[in-house]
Length: 456
Image 1: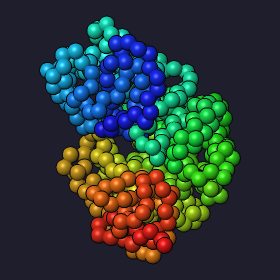
Image 2 (image 1 turned 90 degrees about the horizontal axis):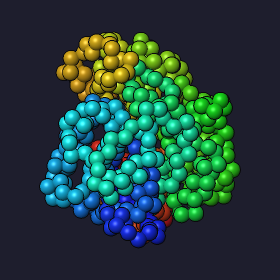
Image 3 (image 1 turned 90 degrees about the vertical axis):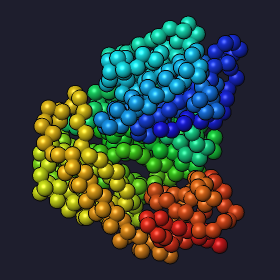
Image 4 (image 1 turned 60 degrees about the horizontal axis):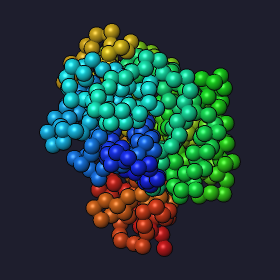
């Protein structure tokens, strides 16, 4: 969960709504965090003010995620607990549930918790602030769903949770329909944000002093294809390079689909002064049989060829991935193939999951035939393998010089990330401050941490 903090406060009209405060809790991915920032922006435009903490809010908004069953059930439990406690403390407060879980599980939410005042999904996102205003002013309960997603994606305006790094969504929705994934059913088909809005938002971020921008999409590589423009993402990257020429800023992008990831993307990043050499390419499985059942649209050979091209073209690049274990029909042999790909790819970052059946997906019709204990054992083996690979690579960082963007203070220690997404902790106190770039000399530490000394 993430508190959406408000960076600046515009002038609001006088009136009762300006006295009401809100708090947004976010479950799930970076896209959800960005949507919460947009929702917060819109609520402030209407005259609501951010609360200092959740317990003080008149309006408590839950922006939910439905990707995994366990996370969805946990979210429902948290929402119910907060709703009960909040109503006891402040009977006039209202509870708002929106996002993917609302879209997917509306009946369950309505039946389980009658304390929800506003329930909405993903297709009517721009309307939600007005629903909240109506529920607050008129003290009515609202259930509002739009069955078809909007045809255009022209969202702009965000209240960022950081003064250093910002998310900039360029697409919303997904056309891939991977057999295990509920996202296309909760978000609708992909819509690409017009180039002129991206340019406007990006230039605003530069003017506001942001140091890093992350382009977001369920599949950024397919940007523009809903407008029948092949190669539009590569064109956008070249445009961004031109727009930001001579400006000190980093631009990253998440997430890439291996099927649509091209060598041209790597070449553009290699020659760029602003694009970051970090590539997140979800593998999901290393067995061609399982990849086909997952409807991923590539083979393990295709995937490894792209990884090898990145490593050869940009040796300093880091590569992240997502992997699912225990998909229906995954044998011990299939799992060993995943481990083989992991060893060859030498991932720097990995998010690993046990397969979770999701209603409405094609895989939901398959027999979930692997015992939970076996899934957990495979997850344990996979994580141990990934950890060993990472630790074997750490000594090669000794003595290397890297520029980092200092972005946080934790336990009295400053830390930052390189353009390739490597987090580095400063070894000693220095005059460096959050928001600055500094060159550091790297030293691997205990566990997975990497330390750095500010270069004199």
